[in-house]
Length: 212
Image (cartoon, rainbow, N blue to C red):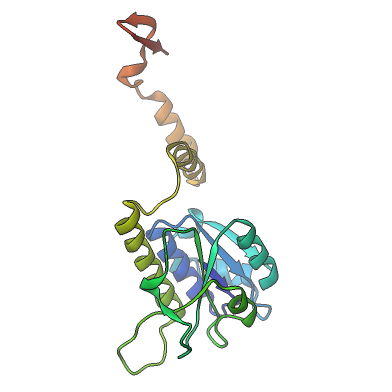
């Protein structure tokens, strides 16, 4: 997820909460120059339900900096755009099997023209009622949920990490568990080794076991 210039830090925290709940590992945040992002974000941590600890949050001063970063990382860019333009597609029509950065704009102006011009696709979230738009955090949550659903449907999984990367991420999360990381790691070290580690340099048929 990419949030661009949000005014309401409660919305940003809610997006973070949904991102973590749906298994996204990071969020890219373009600052709004009219707000004190660091101060307000800390004040709204209640809305994030602690998710800020588990997300890799990248913060940028300008749209140009964020755009350059996500392009260099190879993401296709999908921007939300509330318009009747025929080029706009629905969220389910995006190819979510590709690495994708989804941009949601601020509560007043929406996504900037800079991001719209760079976007590989512009999307809308279907609506059947009479209001003209969703709340930013609700729209972001619906998009993330649908992306996750379609990735599982087409790929059989929603994540991209291999087994080694998953183990590294798990170790990082243990270390981020503020106040209890030493206790948790100590408890892991005190546990009995797995069965396959009980034997060292002992050949049994064609297998060799390692003892610790």
